[in-house]
Image 1 (tube, rainbow, N blue to C red):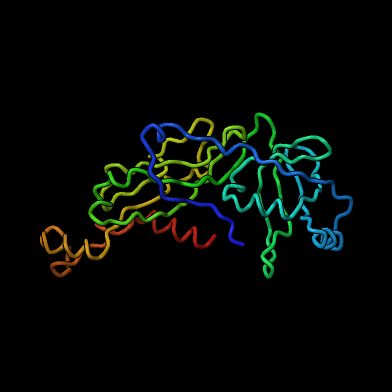
Image 2 (image 1 turned 180 degrees about the horizontal axis):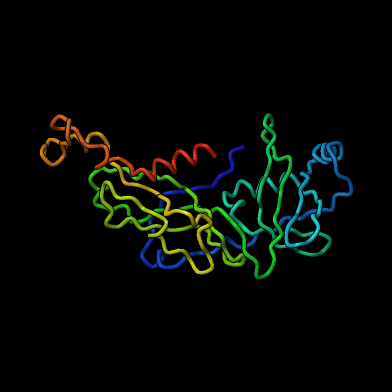
Length: 255
């Protein structure tokens, strides 16, 4: 099962850029209490079309529940389930939660377990929020044929749990080839802060394709040629991603 979601290209007006939408309206997921734990009990539930789950957090004891597999799959396929507040209906009451993990069977590709974090009023939560880039047509570097090299498709944020943004919008207006976008340039919505505070990490860079590099090299050999380089070659430090971006990509690939 491929869970839909992630970053999608779109056109956004300046008015839309100036405000951040909060997470989608809460989804509702009926659940029933699990009387027994263990592999045997979980397998029995799955044979009946149910998915074992647990609700934890909020300084309360974990609650073991089971939910209907078809309904869980339907909500997963909306594309924003993992980025939505889910109200779990249990014994006539509703609990506001945030999905933290849905484990899939490696062979059958069906959900076999789900974890939900209980949301407490006035609390904070660490989440991963997708990044959306806008106004690409207003970037001189992209108009020349440059490529937006996205290092981080999601940002790790600490947010008020009642003000979780659905996405972080980044405007690339005026960006040239060789520019990098760092977290310090991004204005985060009220109630949100970066979970990474020890460095000004790179989110994206604008890099030149080889055709553009050749064209610029032919146009100004003196400017583009470094020590020990032939005319027409482009210095890697002038056009390539910065060191921070390369390190971020290495870190992300190792996660």
